[in-house]
Image (tube, helix red, strand yellow):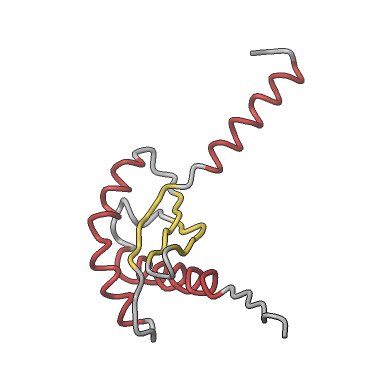
Length: 120
C-alpha cells in the first residue's frame, strides 16, 4: 500500500489570516498614530509548526527604524487583540519585518536605465 502524500498549505492559510487580521487591527486601533498609520502589510510567512508568523511591512516613512521600534512596541497588544479575533486554540507569535523589495526594484531600474544611457 502506497503511503498517502499530504501536501498542506495550512501554514500559508494561517499566515494569510494573521496578515488580514493584523492589518484590520492596525487600521482600527492605530490609524491615528503617525508612524503606524502609513504602514502596509505586504506579506506573511508561517514558521515553526505555525507557532510563529513573520509579517512583512512597507512604509513610506523615511525613518524605518522608528516605525520598526513602534511596531515592536505594540506587538504584544496586537497579538492580544489577534487572539480575540481568531477562533483558534493557539495564536502564533508575530514579528514585524521591513520589506525593502520596492527600494531594491527601484535601484535595479535606476542601474538599468544608467546602463542604457551610458551614465553612471
